[in-house]
Image 1: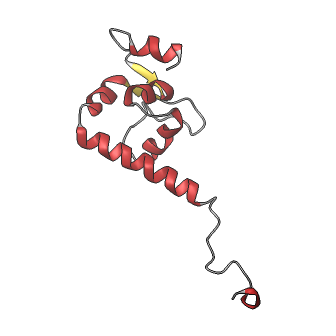
Image 2 (image 1 turned 180 degrees about the vertical axis):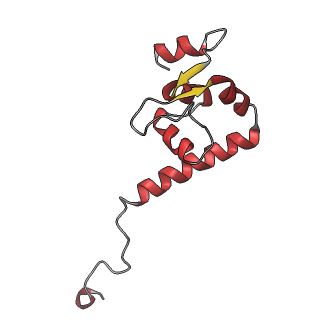
Image 3 (image 1 turned 90 degrees about the vertical axis):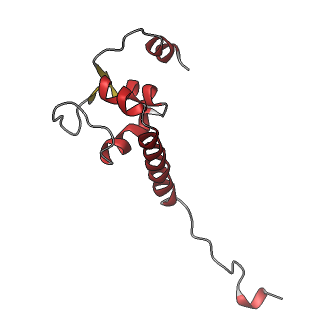
Length: 105
């Protein structure tokens, strides 16, 4: 954990509004996973922020959701599926025969 994360998680009372990085700390995931959770409608930013704006989230909603085991399972599945799809774009499809037909025994 970095010092900022340690000091944030050791607060007795969290602020009412937190940024995406702090939401990731509360949930136990990485900050780059938050956009996937927003897109899957598992967490909702406050207000109606533009696409390129900093998004803030209600701490009470996040903490309440973290007590639900089913929600945590959905979040884990969404994150895993998101990165599996993203990484699949970079994989080279495997071919059955890498050698030309005339060089096989």
